[in-house]
Image 1 (cartoon, rainbow, N blue to C red):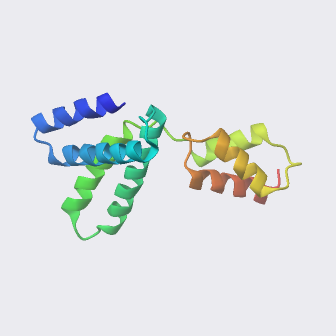
Image 2: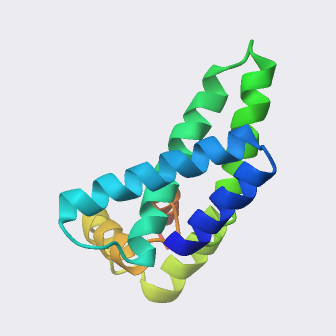
Image 3: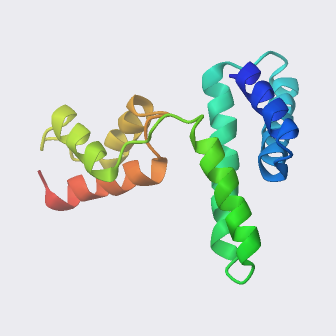
Length: 142
């Protein structure tokens, strides 16, 4: 994954694509910081976590830059570029179906189900979506 990012950086530099170059450099910097913090090389799944964190920051920026259209377009381009490195996330409906398949109506503790779902779907679904699906599961009382 790290090699792919470095190759993409070279491609962006040759193409003089400032936005893509900038976002790759930020991700590579964050990966390096995490590597120093952990005192070991990162696995691909850990690099994906770093990329997801950057995507969330970019999405926050997009929501707050209503008046600056060029900034919004730039951030959308950066986010779309980074999304190709992250596996597709499950939707709330898919998570709900997963809950129905793995838990029955005898489950009464929201915390237990949330904890198990977080472990089972780590990296496959956003925690907010898991929370919504679990709340929906308990509100319907299935």
